[in-house]
Image (cartoon, rainbow, N blue to C red; front, side, top):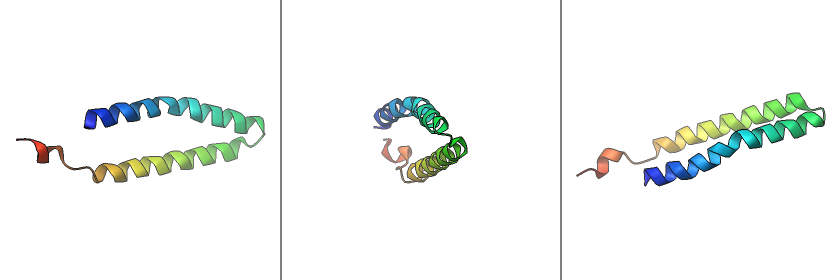
Length: 66
């Protein structure tokens, strides 16, 4: 189960730099670069905190070993 979840999330995570760069490029073109960096930093911080919180809710892998 964990391998499938990691592979699925890996595909999404692989696109993150591309999406972040496109976001910053679009915001910088409109002259709002500082705001773009602040929003992107806040989004990454929230996603990292969410991932950490979710990882604590996973069942222990030792619970399923024979």
